[in-house]
Amino acid sequence: MSTSTYVTIEQYQKMAAEGVFSGDDKRRVELIRGEICEMSPMNLRHIMTISAFNFWCVEMAKQAGFQLLVQCPIRIEGLDSEPEPDFAWIHGQEYAKAPAAADTVLVIEVADTTLSKDRGEKSTLYAESGIQEYWIVNLQAETIEVHREPVGNAYRSVHSFAGDDAIAPLVAPDARLVPGELFATLPRQE
Image (cartoon, rainbow, N blue to C red; front, side):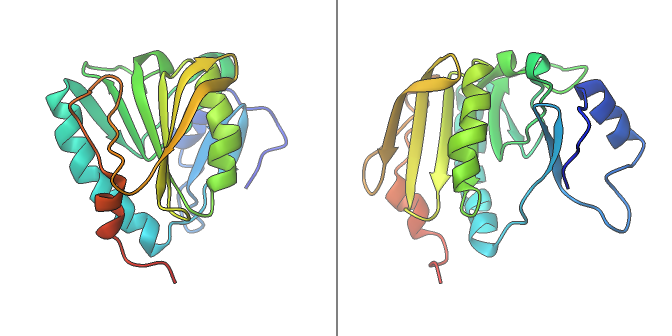
């Protein structure tokens, strides 16, 4: 599903509230730069990665004083976007509407069939909105790509971690994650 008409965040939220995206032909969608984009269905490996990563994120985000969102929208006003990353660490407070990019300290996308979109369109969007840190859990290569230092519409620092190379979010240096340990818990690729 893709729109040929530009849709604002307010129009998109109104459509969702009116049930436009539910019913018999319900689809997972997100708003990217004024366009309603259909999200890819998740395969078993993606689902199991979300589950495994969730345990780490819940514990580490809470210890660091952040709230965890799982597959929930982040509002990017100036770019008429409401992407729904797999995980987002946000400042822990009450929100009257979806948290904004300015409230977000870390975004994590699990990527298999969506790898080129996550490295391209999503990376550009997150950098342009000023999100300081963006991770891509690359299921194909069994790596975690860490994007930091947004400048304009790109991240100045991009590093890939695999095996025993421990990583931690900038906002939680004690929240160490070892990619090899994460990927060892997942079903093998077919």
